[in-house]
Image (tube, rainbow, N blue to C red):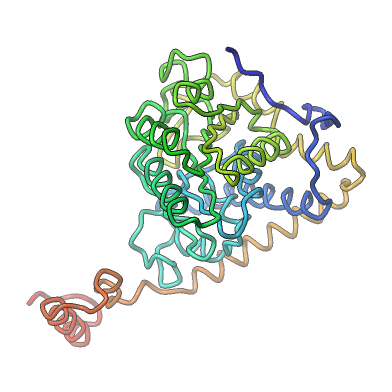
Length: 366
């Protein structure tokens, strides 16, 4: 019953040609660039948070291969229901970096108008739904969307991300059971990064793996090296093919490691030994992928240096542009709930706007 770990690239960057997925060279380079962007962005955004320029941040250091590789497989009509550590997947779909930074600030350039908690972005044009804080709630939501697509005969696959901690929630069981019974075209991506904040995987389940749980729900579970982007792509392609053929869902457990803190409010030194982190870095997904590209003669030190400088400048430019925006217009408080604002809210809106004219600084009480 034990599941074998799917792997394509070794830590030395050498691929197993028998299982290596076919990917155009230009796509390989694009995926590598997004992974590097994601890593450098994490570093920069944490610095902004420490400087008080944004309020909160969640890094995805060490998990870039899982999010970038899974999103790459999807087609434009497919949908993503994220957890909160998948900006790389949004960038694969075309999310603009400046829009991402604006969401962290919550300013007038923020696509969600400052209403969401920082790091709870969405990308409507890319069928990338909003991040949400409650653990696991996106799982039954994604299954519902997949079931709706199946009923309407839309050629859509829905991919949902969650951590191993979410598998302890009832939402996981509800989503998995329903998807299995009704063969919903859904791909479950469990990012097993070792810790649900400070709770280790060993305290989440007695199962030998998360992927093995799919067996009880009547569909395949796949255990994949989440630091190996080619293995992630291979596993997700197979899952997407099954879903498009009407064969139902797949659970993919991507075994990776959270190199950083859970969030900007967390200090992992309180619960995680330093040697564990040092060991995980040896299988770093970006280093491994770079070695693979070098082995294929697609990359070298000079190109790496140029990319680092290019991405650094792109991030700095996005931050500078985002910080030019002011706060969201106050009238947006009344938007996006009703198609037509009801009379009582219209009255409140007019009063508020008039009050702001008389008190532009917001001082004074009436």
